[in-house]
Length: 253
Image 1 (cartoon, one colour):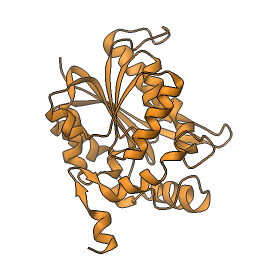
Image 2 (cartoon, one colour):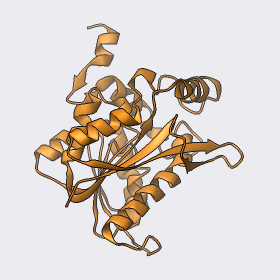
Image 3 (cartoon, helix red, strand yellow):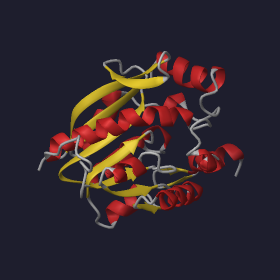
Image 4 (cartoon, helix red, strand yellow):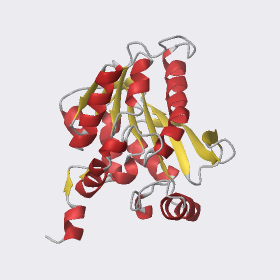
């Protein structure tokens, strides 16, 4: 098998070429000045989005010390745990899934050193769903653009959501602006991300993601853009979904 064919090899919805790419970056997950710098800058926005939506849904006070106490969350494609850990600190019972073994090893080591209880597993969402587990929230953040079958993957993630629960997603829109900013700008000009991190053809439009979510039996309740502010070197929510965006969806109780 040639290299291109090997890179396309898949296991379920897992693209092994993508797994190998992120496995090689595993040691850099918690380096806020390294290849994951953008993710660390982006993290406060997505964490607040998830926290606030869950608090509204389950009648919690987002200002409480542990507003997500007792809620079960499955973080699919958790990487090194950059999102899983702060959610656990807010009181949630978090399971982090990632098929890249080195990612899980890094995530476990960091959580243990920090004293944060997260159940990290080198497993896929399809295996977890097939085993009968269901969650108050399932997260597919920055992962749908890396799987081999986006629609089937999203439907499976939806199947992991309990009645009354929520699904959260974050990804990149497939527009000319996203190609210019997320690939040419971020990977080749600014060097924010390693070259080859993204494939523009695998970017997902909000309509495509919404259709996949509806096929999974959930209703999209919110879509919001996320934009970068160079003056503050930070990210904020916006009506502009042309590049980065997040969605929330719910399963009826």
